[in-house]
Image 1 (cartoon, rainbow, N blue to C red):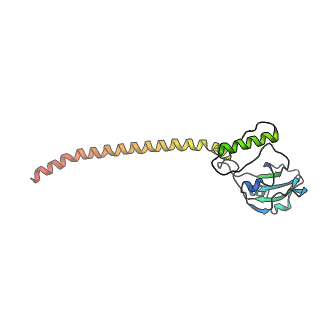
Image 2: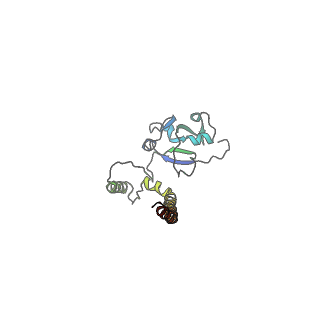
Length: 187
């Protein structure tokens, strides 16, 4: 707005997405499918509000779209990155991406149910990815570094212990003669 370039991440969603991710509102409200005005609105995170110096974000708008809610900051990238500005827009039509939350150990069965349901709706094959897998991919380098660091630490401790054993055996061998000489004098 006001001929200013605004850069932020934007995610289309519906009224169920924010509760599904357990995001917490600190101001405003969630999308309401019964309100036509929500189809042209944003929900933003705290980083968005801070970056754009908004004192009352619920009274602001961008590109003619009103901000109706502010959620607490959450990590949507690797924790190596600072939390960046994020906005949600209301997408009330069928999307190319869905988020499904399930509990239990039947991952394969749930995956097949999701694939079958989406195949019925869209008529084409879909890919199912787990958020846990996506998050794990963000930290592969950290795990590799952790393994290397652990191996090198164990190796360093092992070498230290060998040095300590060598020093102890050297001192024991040197003092063995002293002990033997003292024993002979005392008898």
